[in-house]
Amino acid sequence: MNSTQAGQQEASTAAEAVQQATGRLIGILNDSSIALLVALGHQTGLFETLSALPAAPSGLIADAAGLNERYVREWLGGMTSAGFVDYQPVDGTYFLRPEFVPVLTGAGTENLARTLQYVPLMGEVAPKIFHAFRAGGGTRYEDYPRFHHIMASESAAVNDASLVEAIIPLTGFLGSLRSGISVADIGCGEGHALNLLGATFPDSTFTGYDFSAEALATATAEASSLGLSNVRFELQDVGRLEVREAFHLVTAFDAIHDQAHPAEVLKNICAALKPGGTFLMVDINASSRLEENVHLPWAAFLYTISTFHCMAVSLGQGGEGLGTVWGRERAADMLRDAGFRSVEVKELEEDPFNAYFIALA
Image (cartoon, rainbow, N blue to C red; front, top):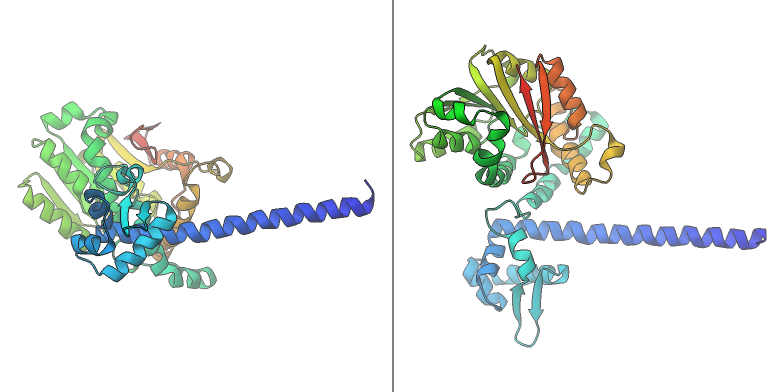
């Protein structure tokens, strides 16, 4: 091969690479647009409506969902283009394909439409993130008015399915909870996990800490509706928690990595445990090393949600910006540095998204 031929081959290879990159970006453009439509379908109840109907025209679907037909028809066009919905032009009917029903509807862990709600939420704060890239700083929790609710709905699906049967047994405290112990949940949010434990183990006492008054109002309302006298919630910045040797078991569900000063929070948790007590920390199941995350199916989402929320809210509080993908290795090291004498990391088949850290005080 002469130099001219080599140059032509190199140019052809470069052009093919550009073409592939173009196709990749067009795919991203389509998929990100579909994510917005999926979030809309979840929020409006359209997926639940479609799953309950036979093939139907847009007017009937809109009436059943209590929505505007013109918007529903355009949304159905997007869902048909995405391959989620089958459209029959002969009679103008739409039908949700059966393989998408379990991943778009219901209260179970399979419903991924809940998770896709983060996409429009990130779009809402994008101008603030753009500004932070230049000026530093970050965002406030108040910039994400629906974040607590989205996160609560996701964790509720996992906890309803697995908390009592699979997650709590990892700690070895199942029998103790039945007998009666004191438990705290750090960053409890809307408190569903704690209320579930309170209802299941009436002889134990439970305290939830969070600094969102709105989330705690929801938590308290649920506890009241369940008639729970053994569960209470306190407005508290856990970075300033001064409780000492009060709890046998402390839990934290995906709450540590976005703290302003996570090392201080972990030290406070260790101090709040009775000698020999246990801390169950549920957090993102990823590596602390980027090169080990590139093959994780949801890695890009983790780094994105960190940029737009978890890291940003920490930096916005003058914190360290630990980020969503702090990873198992760094998390275990920080637990040991906080004073825990042993740390074990476990995984659950039911929840591949999270790692379960069992730390002994």
